Length: 380
Picture 1 (tube, rainbow, N blue to C red):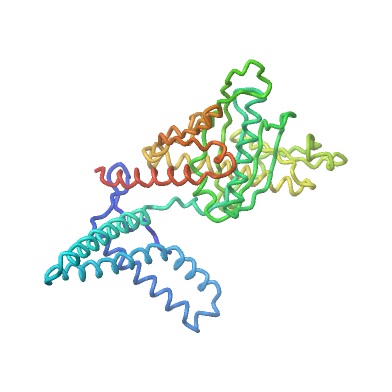
Picture 2: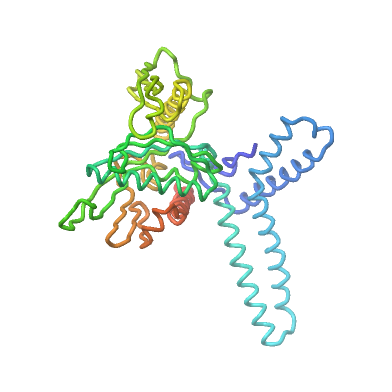
């Protein structure tokens, strides 16, 4: 498999240092050569029947295809640029001279854009980016209003998931009785789910006039969001002796059909004190399986956080630490304004964002993280 880390060396702070341009182009040449090699291997009749190898080759080829395509556009633009520059030596009319200058400027800009694009593609990738996610939203300060805001966030993320073609599935929920959530846990499955949502973890703040507020005063409430990458069983092994499993009757909306039998499951992980509940399914077995999935994701997050802290504390400050105690975004209803405090991005499209149109913020946060990564590469 292609390892993007091979285009980096690391300084004493364990930060990636991007190699010089010549070395970058040498690396891209090797990647392109590997791409062509994989294409040839996949067309080999003696390999076509080996489904395991074909799958591995196809995945590797797919992983490096974007950077190969960008590299080929970069080389093609370079060839065209050289040809256009050679025209400057010819006797041309003033109009043609101006056209040549404009073409040279355009091709030079295109080459610079592609170079930056390829640098980003060669950044070390978060190994969790391709994972599905488990999201947990909990009402914070603000009473019923915080619960209503938690429900707003739940709708925002599930609508965003729908726009991305992901599948959303409720795992557990405790409602407030007035249309909000004390807590809601759900799973999002689809390509790039974690990579698109990983910067959403933290405290989200809302400023608005509650429906029950007769004087028209603006209240401030909060909700916390946690984005957990799904973990495989082989990655997080849970000792059965370390967990305590309790079963109980489901309650609240959606649980009435399960009242005759105790189908809801609560799992307590004794070493960490983590508690996970699930009552969304009709059977105890299904609820236990889903609760274990959530527990595994939480334990995976804890382990990953430890590794990041030990390896590179600086990386966690790129767009905020993602800690739940950190206020990351404010939703101001009177002004139809939404502000992400980590990157100082403000738009006046709050309603649009709450309807699931999150791409502006997701793209900006991703670009900010990439820029910080590239910037840190020059730190010795």
